Length: 209
Image (tube, rainbow, N blue to C red; front, side):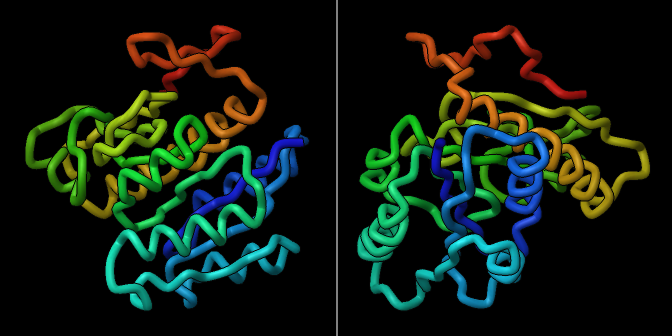
């Protein structure tokens, strides 16, 4: 039984999708803990109500990223995770933290990487005239919003889209994409090749439309 720790900063809608899929699909895994950098994160209440261990490591209590990351790692390691999942965790992690969980640290980013790393992805996609937008699940590396791509979901950018309407459509696709990718990880269905490309061992499509 694999152990998953999920990191959030807010309401954690992707965390909810993962928790629900894990239970409904009887993954060979359990959500061991949900940890936030904000004690008031609404997602902590959701997790606690479902019997999942929760804790908060307030980033504002630490003078720098290194000491925050050390405290966060200590909280994570109490649960001996096989997989650490970033689900709307709004902190840039240090290289040392990323290395500590190398190969078992997943993130979801609201763009079709490598396009539009960083913030304001939906606005930038509209301004660039993109016809497709979407989300990417990837293994985390020290370079922000980079790392081997596990799976992507694509959605159309409509002529009358605003940043908000596009964001809502992408988020709905994330709720399908992220549980699928996390399940693959816990089932051992992913292989990272020498060139950094991730393959799904069973040949399942790694693109959702």
